[in-house]
Length: 308
Ligand SMILES: [Zn+2]
Image 1 (spheres, protein in one colour):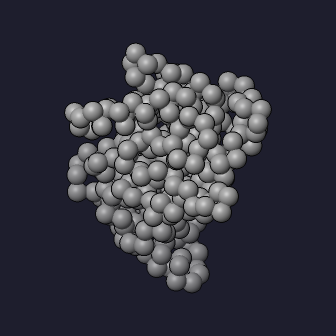
Image 2 (tube, rainbow, N blue to C red):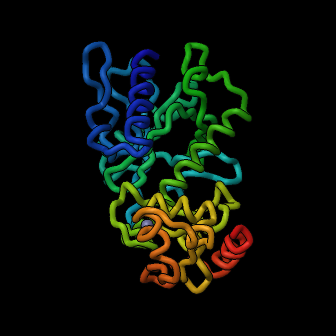
Image 3 (cartoon, helix red, strand yellow):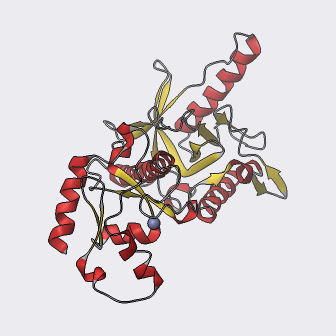
């Protein structure tokens, strides 16, 4: 359990340090245990059990990042019906005895994690070379016939003590939902920023760390897929102004600044950064299906007008 705890602690520390999206190079360094550097895995093969592990259970699993930016990586990763993550057994990469043996060994380690109820780290690929670590997760159902396991997120402290998995099902369901919402937010930001070529749709700022994916209307289905047409890439100031109804976007894509701000006199941020964009056209994605949904814009613009 100690090696496992060291791994879980390190994964969570990296998650905090990198704001939940950890570059693979940082993960490749692994973690320290009893003066030794231990690997988190190769990030290619899926299921990993380091040789330093005492028991038969896997330590970590990986869900590969999407091949195309438009794909959602968790299509195969979350079952909205059971509200659990789904993870498929490995299949041999080649039709050789060695490959089959390696896959069987990995799958046995995954099943053992379920049988022994030990915590795992699930690295979710968000983008090429970027992973969001989820720790701890537990295999709470194993279906060898379908060659699939179900996983639930759990509590970082209580569920990784020697007592084992102690949290009740509703707590785990909540933790799992939170994890899915977070993964969806990462994916939403990524797809929206890509659609807008990493620019603010109002001021064209191209500094990615200052850009955010704004929702036009509330994302009703928190566990469903956030669609690009409900998003707009905005810099932090224009995002906040949009959320606070100080900046509106009409269904025809024209930017409106609230009267209250138009009548104020202040420095360049107000004059250039806000008033200057009154009447400007929103810079929209090239692809028609990625442009803001006019109905959502209309619904939202109505609220802006009422607030003004
Ligand atoms: Zn902006």
